[in-house]
Amino acid sequence: MNKKMRELLAKMEQKRTLAKAFSEGENKDLEKAKGVLDEIDELKKEYEIEKRLFESEKADNEPDEEAVKNSTVDKSKGELDKKDAVKEFAEAARMGFKVKKTMTEGTPADGGYTVPDDIQTKINEYKTAKSSLLDLVTVEKVSTPTGSRTFKARANQTGFAKVGEGGKIGAKATPQFTRLSYEIEKYAGYFPVTNELLADSDANIANAIVAWIGDESRVTANQLILAEINTKAAV
Picture 1 (cartoon, rainbow, N blue to C red):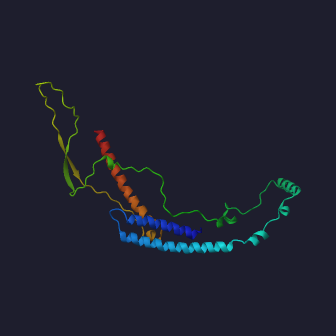
Picture 2 (spheres, rainbow, N blue to C red):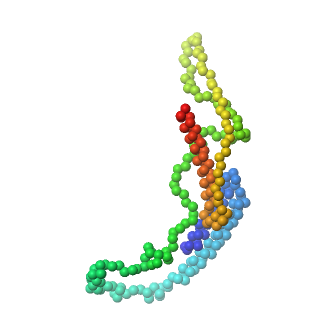
Picture 3 (cartoon, rainbow, N blue to C red):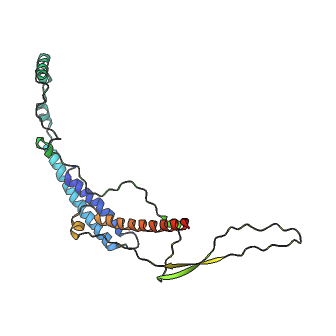
């Protein structure tokens, strides 16, 4: 597999993620999802053509049996005489075992420039634990900026007392109620991104930004809930 084939596979994977995003959720857009799937089909065709070219070039460059037979090294001629080996070792010792300059991957000018860098534009994520505190509170959608709700106050109930035949029944504390007011507040922010980045980036930068914005909402809610808990604890 050559570099172009790997790039095409990466693009197809990014397009699949984008199509899935368009086909799910409240703001899904099936037309855009279909358009992205059509783009994937075109990339598949391009990949198949590149694959056939790659395999054809590979087959042309493979040596035939005759070439392999002619290139076989005669081990008897290639073996180093023991005396020559001892002589070369002694000569190297006298020279302080100085290493001759050789081609190496670690030095750019000595061949390092020919080794491609392993660079991926695909956006990966570190392993992390993300939890939302919204599960610990009651969330209610409202249609007005202010209002109030009535709640039954918390109380320790002790249960009924045992009463004998003809005995007097004792009074119990009745439920108490409280009023909780609310006022809507707005929290917002924006992320400046150029059209050139969205258009030219091989990575699915749009999905990454959408996910980042959603996570900002989760962190904002967590901070508000923790602040309220700390306020109640300090009272």
